[in-house]
Image 1 (tube, rainbow, N blue to C red):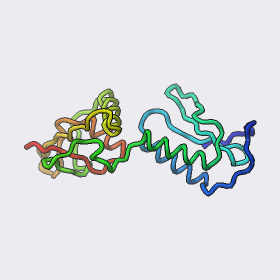
Image 2 (image 1 turned 90 degrees about the vertical axis):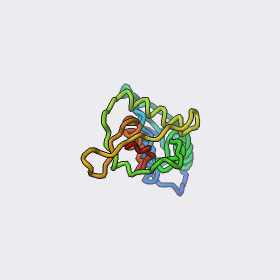
Image 3 (image 1 turned 45 degrees about the vertical axis):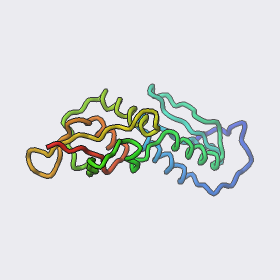
Image 4 (image 1 turned 90 degrees about the horizontal axis):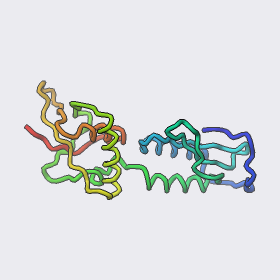
Length: 180
């Protein structure tokens, strides 16, 4: 969070809000955890602690204003709406994946990726977001087979990039089609 030294010219009167800056910061941290594009949100507070701007750091490292000066209640509403529009709920597997009776739901820590492609991960994030938002059909489950070492883990056959995105989003379990 940045502290702004100048008072905004459109400073409204003192507004008492039931929302604290600490609560708003937690909300911003949660959004930044869930929203895995490169632009991260942060708050700027005026000298009086009454007005807040929401800014983000763009891909070029430039601090960019996202909103005008808002009171805490307005910031809370903006962040809730932002989260609804852009953030992904890692517990809603049904929003991401096409799950059938043959699909196993396994802890993500049981899976071992067999490759990692940066471009594939970037594309998978876009596809996961679009599936979640129902822009495209839901994704097929990750395809995996038991690890040859017999240690109870599974090697990913297809869906390595999806696996990395699922971890970034915060999924604890993922749908898997098991191959023998």
